[in-house]
Length: 256
Image (tube, rainbow, N blue to C red; front, side):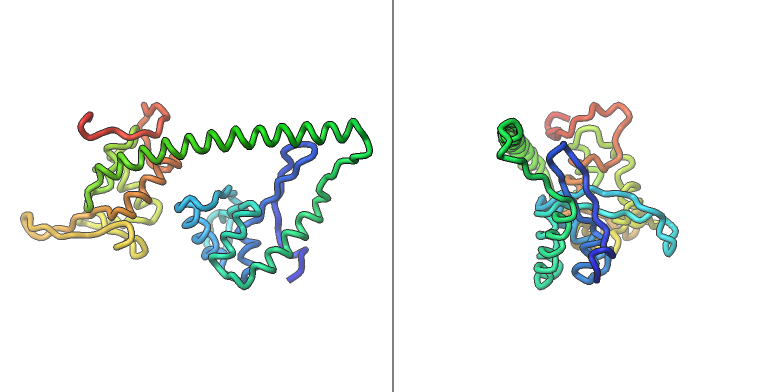
């Protein structure tokens, strides 16, 4: 596998700073795995809050007749992904990142020039201040979300249907929740209602049966499924009402 056969993605955020990312397709080549398997691993790690990624729709995949989505992750997160997929390939990933960084010609200031050295120092100082500010904001947001999660979890009852669970989430169009879950492949629409797809059955959804003018199936969330559904809400991936105010917050059942 040659370096030229791999595809990398980079963006310049300032005159002196490059932020490199690696595509899910390239990671698949490095670890010799299927691209869809790599993407599923990336999605699972994001759901657990361990990494972040930026999706990008590439040219249509002729084999399946629809656009192919590629994910881009930063250097740190690529190691987390590869560690999940194939630890023995970590050394190959290290080598590839060295090639990427070398190809970008990362900038080093001329410290013999007082003006350039001063600019470099000022830039580093500003970056540290910005990082500190972001860390404080991130900590505040984590504390806020933890409080929301605790309140949502306190109101969760095992077996609660997706629309019932979403009633406590500000702005969700609960009439469209199950149809949305069908559109992403989590549920299957049947004559009798909705059933979980094979991958999601027992992980995120449970099916029970009730005697009501005959036997009927009742779809309910597991606790893991509730967390999964809530992560979709936080990432604004659920169907929302037209008059939604844009806030992702919960509503106490006692207040509704």
